[in-house]
Image 1 (cartoon, helix red, strand yellow):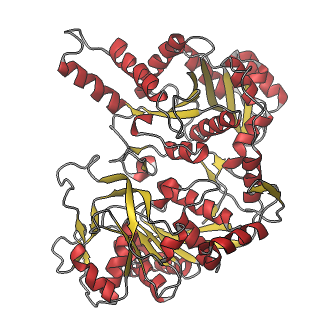
Image 2 (cartoon, rainbow, N blue to C red; image 1 turned 30 degrees about the vertical axis):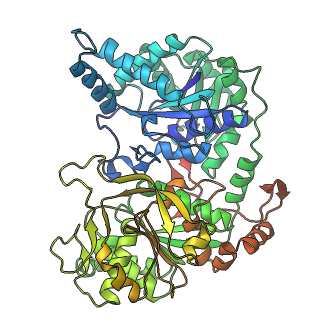
Image 3 (cartoon, rainbow, N blue to C red; image 1 turned 135 degrees about the horizontal axis):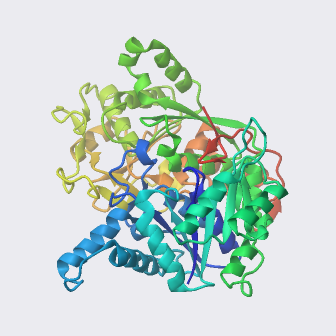
Length: 600
């Protein structure tokens, strides 16, 4: 097994996750099998109980693991399925070591950070790296490890020490360290400054880790004299210094690395030069160019609770982007704070109220994502009501589905106090109830989590057609509340259709309004399995409906013809290279890189 460790210096948010994912893509394009591990030095056992404002979205895996959002980047870039153990946290390691101590595995020894914690970290890495994640048998060839945080953080110290030991443990030729650092440009002098990176590398060396490669983040490509200075003062060969400058979207990063021959440098450090082939990245290049040149916009409102931080809905944004690119449209996201749609805001902040409703009324489609707590719920209900009454394409995810059901019960069934017991425990008409198997005393890891079957009960529904008329789908879940089974019959008689249910037939998974052009809610999170080039069917349906092209997407034969007729320059469809004339024009930065979509 070969290991590539990606660390970060100077500041956080440089894009280590995107860099690690892009290195994985590059190595995979060379014919190697790749897996990934993310190390988060916080004490939490997992990301499940953290606020999105603190750490961005919680990404959910097939096995129910609630993990850091960077694992979502790994899965999307590498098209793999990771496990909860691919996300290592300080909490997990200490919990593991203390459990062994209580069991008596240490035979009365004094349990210490060195060697017990550091050994546990190394053993965890070796064990998880051997787990196949690409659907094939046997371990991968290369494991890309990302160390979260910044070099010098006190909480990272045990991991730094463990990784220093690990590099000697696996031996030279099996370990490659890529250090991502910042080379800023001061407006006063207008030159690229190397001192922050020099200090970062000095700190890294002082902790026992020697970088093989420097990946330098900057607004523009590094000047040659700057690279020479870094090589001299950081003791890294000139050809091992790469520049990761700002690009129109993050899909450009694998090609950017290839153009600087990063694959040759990494394969040389890992003694793989004799077996790697020239990386084939035509599909990535074509997709990136298409994404950078789309012009016809599709405007989607994301009505949520955490709209001030886009990372809180990162997978939703990526799924929207995948679908928009598939439909050859430029994605424009309008962030609508759910609270600003409510009547209380009209009294307290009329300008915010007017602005929110102006945004909502100017979009082509509405998406209400998941969330927890009662803040903004009434605003989400109003958004669902507006979309339903005005025939605007609507997609509700998790809580978004639940508020759509509540709104329907209030408006159509005239149950004005209909609500969820999450927000109003004593409501007379509980449309949404707490799941019987849930825990009311422990929050972490007690929800209905991971991949579950949703069986289509309405065969001619829009959602069934979008999924290719399958009898069931496996999608990832993260919820404590569900549609009240006792109200289903009444809701269906009023016109609501529950198109898919769980294996028991008692838990509602997909809800539709057949009389509406596109009004769908899903209890699961379809965004977690969306991939570049393989957009989530429900997101594809939302974008297509918002563009007036839903029929072509639901009809497989016409959908194929639609794809060919709108195919971009150098994009490969069924192995055939096609030409394009449009792409994504506007971009906005995310984690230092441009994320390939325009938001406002």
